Amino acid sequence: MQDIENEIRNLVAEIIEKDPSEIKPDSRFVEDLGVDSMMALEILAGIEKKYKIAIPEEKLAEFKTLSSIVDIAKTYLSKNA
Amino acid sequence: MIFKDKVAIVTGGTRGIGKAIVLMLVREGAKVVFTYSKSAQEAEKLIEETGKLGAQTIGLQIDVRDFDKAKELIERAKTAFGGLDILVNNAGITRDKALMMMTREEWLEVIDTNLNGLFNVTRNAIVTFLKQKSGNIVNITSVSGIIGLARQTNYAASKAGIIGFTRSLAREVAAYGIRVNAVAPGFIETDMLAGLKNEFKAKMIEHIPLSRLGEVWDVSRAVKFLLSDAAGYITGQVLVVDGGLAIK
Image (cartoon, rainbow over all chains, first blue to last red; front, top):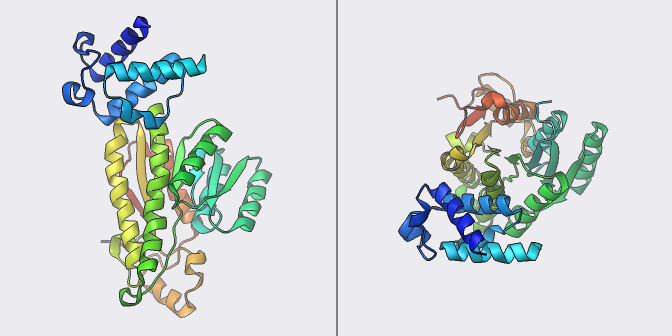
């Protein structure tokens, strides 16, 4: 499961153009990392594509930190399994 | 067939300009889902007509004023045809009256259908377009929203609103490969004009430099252009199809 966190960290880093080391599990996306709504959507789409899962658009509001995203991804991964 | 296998949604698709747009899209190879509010018979006829052209077309009775129904519409198109490429926001109504006689209901009804309805459908489609980094939107506005027309304060306000919406969204989503444009028809021979007296129509024609009322095909051809690759470098624009009526 640690792998998922690292994979998603790298994916987020690429989209928001930051070094993965800057993205701590609890760094706040908007306040600390400057993530905007379009970036959040790209992250969602990126995760959907990578893990072949569907995450409802409504979940975007819960994309607040890396750890919150990892939790959401895990939830939908287990639903698909 | 320039829209071969593209999936398109057209709101208000059974009559007038909307019907012409549905038929244009079908002839160009698109799979179309159209909506209608009341005209169930016309919807059936249209499905039959497109069927003869060898197309699968879906007609849904949906009130665009209902946000959740608009969401269903997008889902239906995606599940039935496997995606979404084109959205034509055409559904619109008029409740013409001098402002001093206009009721609050007549004001709200027009704004709710023409402007809020367009928000409802586009809001539910935009995430799909953003995710796939492609999409094409054409909104049907009106010369009324550009030059203003007496007895149409409600309609003109809704149509001017659509122009502002079009320009803002075009800027917002351009980086995602999505183009957003509008077509502004002038006086087109449709049911919307059917109630007008012939003398009034003749008077209108006097104000049109090209000296005739428009046909629905004049409008659907403009929509076709904006949706096509020929318009690949055009976004946020309002293409006026009015025989010159609103020339500035």
